[in-house]
Length: 225
Image 1 (spheres, rainbow, N blue to C red):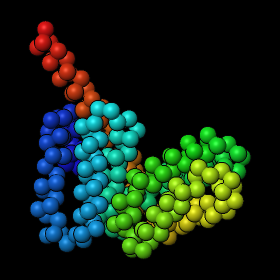
Image 2 (image 1 turned 90 degrees about the horizontal axis):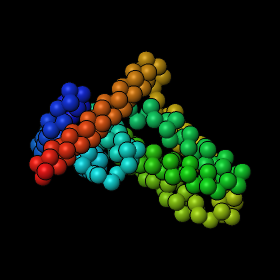
Image 3 (image 1 turned 30 degrees about the horizontal axis):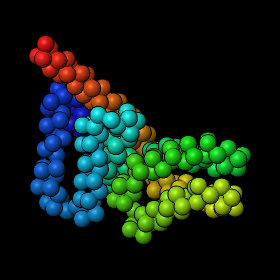
Image 4 (image 1 turned 90 degrees about the vertical axis):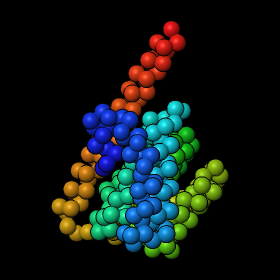
């Protein structure tokens, strides 16, 4: 949130400085807060991904926002153990997997690979959060499903034979969200609203950063003139 506020106020240099100082501040307080080694590793990993998203010139807008969202969800998974925001990404994860399975059944290879790529990218967004929220053996189990899909995706004949297994994987991911959601609807709704607000704030930061870079480039070109 400390990096989102300067972005909303269009203080883009300040936002970049906050991001730059995050690792130092985090490492200083991590052990005081009683974080596990795995939690620290996942936060540092997602932080580095977010930092690269803000500085990369070649990264697509979608990939950039995905990495920033990954960072936000990872930090939240540590600070909000009972109702983490990654629970509100169910449709984001399940929908492309369902569409991929349907496309494979219809023999639509292009659509199958496109939807599967979407599923894999969205799984990567929540993966650090899963490592934090789930017992180690459960997190590894979902990773094994991903490895299986990546292994068989280019073998169409095998995929046709394994379509039943793909549907079983789909059921497992549905259970992942269902079993970890609390029955209290109100906190769940608040979490959904919060993640939507985070999307908007992240977009504002990125748009502002692009504007800042563009203005800075114009000034540099004028100096050359």
